[in-house]
Length: 146
Image (spheres, rainbow, N blue to C red):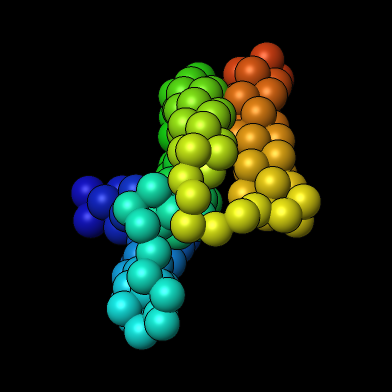
């Protein structure tokens, strides 16, 4: 029984390494962002932070969640596929909301690169998650033969 428990817990090794180290890095990143905002000479409005600061943290968190979902030892591919689709749809919705706030805010005038890197590319990434989830669910499960 001890070997079975050890083998079952061994399947979670990558999951805990990814979640632990990435969670620590994400916490440090949040402190850096907060420190940079606090030391900024130009006061940022709440809309400017919501349009350009918060999405960065959300995107890093989304990467952590996707890595966690894909590294967990699932018995089938259905659950991670559904989670990827839900996460992708939620991300697309969040990007749409951030885009609307970026257009409304007046503290910073976005240039083309801002629109590309803060809205277009992240939206494409979240749309790719939806596609990946749909494709993952459609592929045969290689684990089912074990």
